[in-house]
Length: 219
Image (cartoon, rainbow, N blue to C red):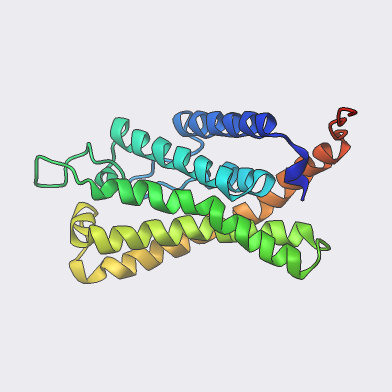
């Protein structure tokens, strides 16, 4: 596949560039948008792009960078529910944070690129590389939903009532709140990813395809 046209050094360079982009997006306010009780994100997009260009291993690395950026943002710019992403933010009513916040911050993000890559690879094999803009779009959708669904369900299972108390809503409305955030927050993120990812990946692949392969040394 096209990712094999780059050597290891070029892959590391692209990974470093995308990692830097993730941090820049985070701390310039376009990667994580600090709304009162939700923080929609666009940081999954460079993770998915990196995975589709370079493979699942690099996608997982970029997902880890996303998780790190998310934890740092929650730590240094805390909101009402930042304790679910940072162990350095005290749980409401206590004087300590929870190590489980690292699971919420990192695990879904590491899986974004892995899921996106394997969805793409399966569809690419099915269509024999004939519908790549569609497969990139579906992979972008899958990667974004992986982040949203896992993060919100991890919050529900690990923090549940604590998270809901911080949002000042009744306990019996916890899962309804999760579903509403999926609808209001997660679905638009997934649609945006399905539109943006194939446009950027398609442009980058076109550039890659024009780069001549390395000349093999003569024996």
